[in-house]
Image 1 (cartoon, rainbow, N blue to C red):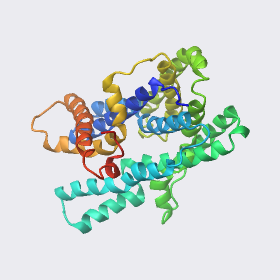
Image 2: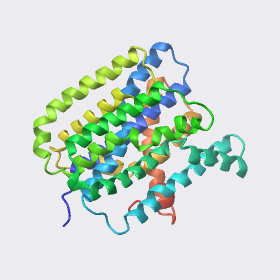
Image 3: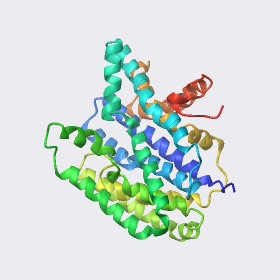
Length: 344
């Protein structure tokens, strides 16, 4: 039986994708302009407001998976995801390395060294792919033992585990040596740091239809709590906790509440505008390509713009150019191994 299409899925995916580009547009502005401290502080507040972007994006991946396949997955599940999601993790870094090679040393050795550094150390923004694949494994485990699982207990435990994991890496520094790899790279992507996001998305997707009445009643409460959580994040930034990262526990709570708020709003959404459908469709490709395109925009922009105008136009350019390039690439055989699979 074909399951009901939830209109909110496209809104959530587009919302998360656009937020990712917006955060990185702000970061690009901070690198491009020599700003006074007051402007930098404002940029940090904008970033903390949208720092939920990557966690929300990976939550959407599990939400869709859990809603679509609550019990068993299709036969070619792993094949398609390895080909069209995991392989781009290994191919796109060569595109980025090639671009930086054009700006510096354009040799195969230099390009391959940079690309392998991205891949081995997960030191590029595509690290979210490794998180998603851990979610796939967890999804199979949860499905296998679902009848024994208590959603309320597991959600509570997963939040505590993730908060404890974040606190551990915040409190203790690396012992040095080989441990630096864990602390500075793999520590960011290991599943305990994302377990709360997975568990909530898993149960929300699995029971998407059943929880609609609850979301309608609790929606206003979620929205109020989200605003309070955001204000607390902003307060922490202004109070000196300036590390803008999704691994902060205040951001963890803020992201979870925002996810539930958007879900509660999406209950009332029946139709999806064409633009939102397009952004949702190309979201994976936008995520992969936009960082390089933002750098291209900053480097070759022929006009002098204010920092505000630069940030907004860079954001628009990052989204539109990513979609345009993806649309052109999808007609080339083999491009699905670079930007994922898109319908022609």
